[in-house]
Image (cartoon, rainbow, N blue to C red):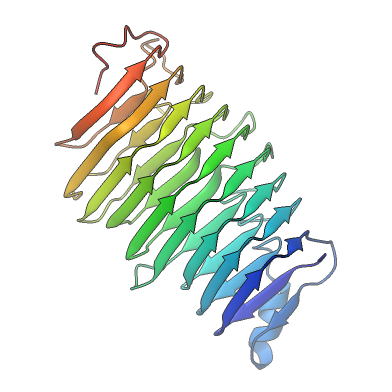
Length: 276
């Protein structure tokens, strides 16, 4: 299916389709003047959802393009469930080259399971998946590989989290991404668990302002976070931009962290004593 679709105030369910965006005007489902505004917005290359719910199952997003946020999906104030899907060669000019997902700090929930994201290499994008303001987030079985930002973007990540209170990243693989992998800031009281996941040959090529390190994980403004758990994860040959050339895999600026992890062959690390 070629085109761009937008829904406001409704539940949208998609299954077993392939979506590719086009340069034509998007088709919008919304009341009255809201339909015109929704159709004219530049977010969400293939799908834009506001004030509703989105369920995506076994859907391929191929070459979706947004001139602002959300190359494949832009969802605001919506419950979102994405399962068994693929995102390839999508692009945007800011956040969420694959998905831009904003729960607006309400009671919304988000789950992404068994989904592949690869070959998204827009030089203007800042994040591949942007997540903020959900009551609960579960990411399980995610594979993100061979994605890259451009030359000018410093605050960047495969997945960026903000204003989150309960988050789980499990059984996921991040490999050969030319960008920081997980980036989080402005945390709310709650838990953040990263379990049984692999971070392999990822490279943060830009750093961020005066802060460097954290090629695999980078968290800041996290004093409100109740608990951070990293368990059963492997960090292998990751690199970070670091003016001091220490190249840690993990840069966590939290008061207390609990880590149970294995570190192998990170550049600048002997595998026995990683800087936490």
